[in-house]
Length: 595
Image 1 (spheres, rainbow, N blue to C red):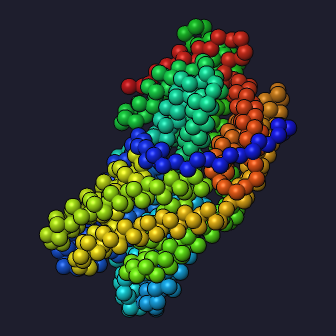
Image 2 (cartoon, rainbow, N blue to C red):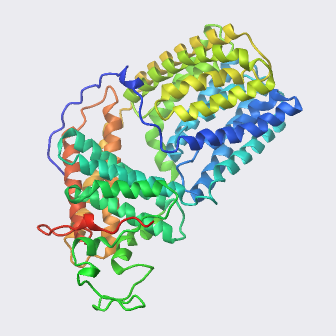
């Protein structure tokens, strides 16, 4: 472990304009946008025909599950979506039962705050991904303030369950057409990130940021491939080899060809065949076949004594991927072990949501759940990100109420017009939210206001006023609660992450220096070290945005990352994926993508 002394951590300036800066849209922005429309439209239109649009709030609870898991392989998506539907039904059931048992607003706000905390923690612990807990909290908090009787609860839950089943089918619908679509996208992102790092690998802050992003993208690609199931396939092995190529580019950025990496990424985003790559060992270290390399018989056996082909590829390719099967055999961390570090977030969520709801009630609001949901939506990994989300939420909601005022005359033309406006807002929210949260909120706000009109039209001015007040209350009170409940364990998590990197680096270095080390052990050590480095960077970034904590060992973090990256390069070279020092690399001369 480095003996470098910790350096004091300066509190980051809280951004305002920077929080509103637009980014590039997501590669798959259209998937959740079209999916939510496809999930919401049939149940809502059916209710329009039946003249029971007042029940659309319950079907929409199930339909909104279609927003989740679009980055997951279909084998994993089926399970995640099922759990999302069950989680939605569970929160809705608690809310409906509470609403049927009491009309005490303080009690209902308290129940909503506790539900919001549980939903936040569970989504973070299971890494369910965007839109995470916000949709769950929006549905359950709104349901708390809808008058209910115990006899109505089963029917309303049945409507939500039916819509949730339809949302599951919508989410799984692309599987027969493009079964490896999520894996292809994750691999393409890893290749693009590796190419970006290769282009900026001149040191300095920009290169370091690109390197961290590239390692995170490669790690995410591996996690996506590992989640795709245990059954091997030719397509998945080809994708795994491309991720190995991205790792090779990270280990030797000077020898990488960014244009080739980007070409592979473009091919993956299309509908053609997955690009095929050669064996990095022969591409980098040894002569290629057309240069006098090892000859093979028609059956594929090597004639140089190294053994026959196995598992559908050369022996080198089999060695590259031997660690993948080993990692699939490792049991995931139990859920309870991931809940401990989330205690500060749970307290922040419960306290902030409860106080926001109480203040809203004190101001005479009829819908305190708006303030509660605003507070719930703020809480991110640290105070700095929470502040940015507060700025985005306020700006988006203020612009959104103006949009609501503009579309209300159209929405009040009739039930069908109301449903069409809701569908348009759903689509716009998912299409824009990837650019920046505030831009998506511009559509989310009129959506939430239009949903309140499903049982019957309400005065526009009153809705706009209430929404503005509740937004300001929720953002202010929620952020104050986040500042009051500090995460003092952030520094300890950085120390633990540093220790994990040191141990993983020592093991990888020891195996790289051991001539008897097996390919499986080397691959497992390399992958473990890469994962530890990604976790260290994420932990350090999250801790750096916290307030009122001990000084963070920033210098040790930087030195640990540098040492780990050198060890990763040495391990890759030891595996034969790179040429040895002083050897001319022919990495950039590998065969191109298949047509």
